[in-house]
Length: 90
Image (cartoon, helix red, strand yellow):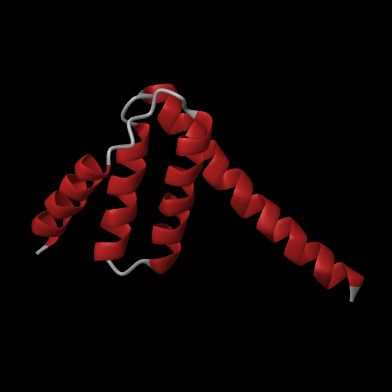
């Protein structure tokens, strides 16, 4: 029983490390636009109906917001990004 609990915790930690690493990578490439890029990738995943990828990139966006003080997080820009991605996919 304890081994199953440990496996579950290790799996959760691996998932967390993956989105934290993706957030750091986006910030390293372009800190100002990292949040919008993560939102763009989340929208692409949502449009493709890829639930796991959507949750991953939404978590990446949240992590970018947490670690990048220069990241732009303007809701109007995010809405424009979402609209653009939805138009592109339809």
